[in-house]
Image (cartoon, rainbow, N blue to C red; front, side, top):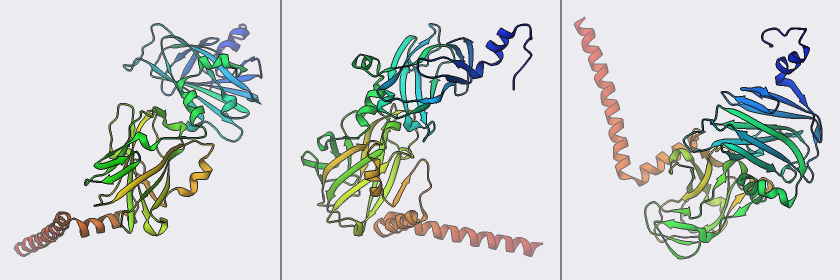
Length: 377
């Protein structure tokens, strides 16, 4: 609802102040509408960012045919802007089409420093017929100046203004491999790149390269490996390491592959990233295995999957998969874990029996005590 009143005698001021959230702007390609959230327009192209979740949405009434085109913007943060301790504010651009709205996987992130930040987003390489753009700025309640968005031809000269996330997005759109040589074994002996011989109680393989990948631009990770573990069920745990965060159970996913669905020790599995919600970059991956004496693992391929190729890998998602931080483990998984633990871990078995005995003893004592109180009464 509009607040206050606008004098009829100052019709121009009425247009400029009372209708700011729905202001129409002429662009070089099509008329666009601007909608503001936690943002106050000070002058045309100048905005005061508030909280929470400040963003600007540009709607293109006729849609934009992005073939061979991109969007150019100059974003300026005031010199006195309060920048967070990391030294930079964070920007993010989302795009929507007739077939999808604003989603993390259809967005790019970029740093914003004091002063001018010039960007070119090659949207023609990323999507078709854009209907909306959304600009988010996090970590800075300050004055923001925006020149754009301007639709321009995607040329070699514009590549100097690509944010790193746009380059990574384009590189990953059709996926990219993580070579077997870029994995190191922990509690493994490795006689050759990609070949690991089990030698400890907690075997795992870890990427050695810094992946430096925004999580929203990868669809998931695919593994193709061969090993000879003699188990009825093969249990794994995938960990992902993010900016400034160490390995943690909360950033992991468990999955099980029954041996009857494994052909001659060949494992092909795809773990989607759709349930991993984070604004941070993916830095490393780690895959944990069960301990096995005299067993051998050969990693034939590890690949970060792009959204252009996800359909090919969807059939390889394990039926028994859960993400620790977002889902409760299935009862079937818990039941099997407890049964395995009881049969293989003597200390756990004894602790479990003692716990049952203690619970029964406590119950009998409470019954006996209540009976004594009743007799005295």
